Image (tube, rainbow, N blue to C red; front, side):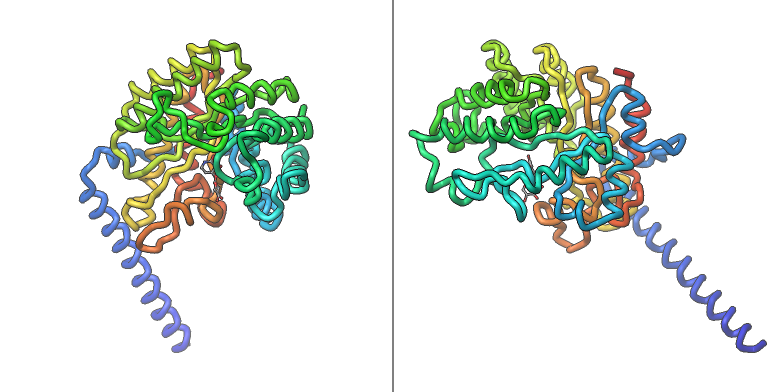
Length: 392
Ligand code: XIL
C-alpha cells in the first residue's frame, strides 16, 4: 500500500515536472515568437486547420493538380515506412539521384561508353507498382557529372556525347515519363553574360544552342513526355531573383520563338524561412508572363530551409508552414501551375541536412513530414493550399 502511494507520488512528481517543462518550452517559444519582429508570425499564428483525412495526392488530384516528392533509391529501398508514406502521399516520383549523369552508388554513366539503368529502373518500377507518375531529373546539367567527363568531353565531341546521352536515356524510358527536366540551372546572371546564361561546359563546347538541341532531341526520342526547363532563385523580391526571372523569361521567349519543343518551366522553389523579401504581385506577374508563352509551370523541388530560424521546433515549424502557405497560395492561383513537388517528403531524408545545416546542430525541419513520417504544420499548409486552389 505504502509502495503504491510512493509510486503514485513519484509519478505525480514526474508528471508535474513534465508539465512544467512543456509549459516552459512553450513559454520560451512564445517569448521567442514575440521577440521575432516580422509579420510572418501573424501569418504563422493561424491554426493551419484542415478538414478530412485525405492525403496530399488526393487533395491535389481533387483540383486537377499533382503532388509528389523526390527521394533517392538508397533510402526508398531500405526504409519501408518511407516507402509506404511516399506511396500514400505522392502521385508522382522524382528519382533524386538515379537519372543524373552520376549521383549515388550506381551512377547512370559509369564510363564514356556505358549506361547503367539499374537504379533508374528500380525507381521506375517503384513508381509503376504504386501507380505513381515518374519524373526524369535531369538530362543536361553542369553538376553531378561523372569524374571522366572533364578529361573526356571537349569541343570536338561534346555534341556527340550530348546526343548519345539524351537518345539512349530518353529512349530507354520513352512512354514511362510524365516529364523530363531536360536542362537544369542554365541561368546564372552572376556569370556576367548579357543573356544571363551560366558558363557551363555545355555552353563552352556547344554555344547557346545546346539548350535548343537538348529539347529537340528529347522530343524526338519521347514525343509524349512533357519537356521542362528547371531552375531555382526565381521566388523572392530581391535584385538577384528579379534579374534571374528576367533572364529565364528571355530564354523561354527565345526557345518558343524558335519553335523549340518546350512545354513547362520548373521552378525549384527552395525557399528560406528567414527571407522576408517576398512580393506576391511580382511573383504572380512572372508566373503570368511564363503562362502567356503557352507554358505550364511546375513547382519541382520545394523545401524551406530553417537554418536561420529559432531553435524551438514549435516556433520553427510554424514559420516553415507559413512559407509553404504564403508561397503556394500565390502560385496555385496561376492556372498554368500543374504540379507541386517537394525535394524529399520527410525531415529524416533531406539534402538540407548537409547543404544547409543549422549552426546549433539541431536537426533541420524543412519538409511536410517529421523524421518519424508524421505530418507537420507544413503538411497542413500544403493540404490547405490544395484545398483552396482553383480547380484546373
Ligand atoms: C541535390 C541532391 O538532393 C543532393 O543529394 C546531391 O548531393 C546534390 O544535388 N537542385 C537540383 C537538384 O536540381 O538536382 C539538387 O539535388 C538540389 C538543387
